[in-house]
Length: 68
Image (cartoon, rainbow, N blue to C red; front, side):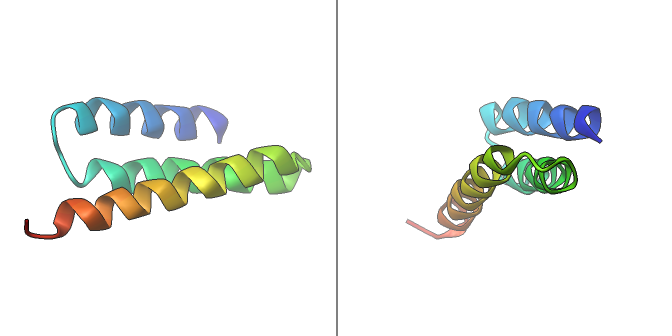
């Protein structure tokens, strides 16, 4: 699961650099996989960090969708 999460986050970062708004959703999916891994392995720091990162990506996705 960790490899899939890492690939999703790398793809998201790559596509965000190309200004693709949907890439934030891919990053959020990767973050959720890291959250699941953190919960199943008891790594609560991983859960907290990825929860924060998912919220930041969600905020960015929302802001990119608004008209100026």
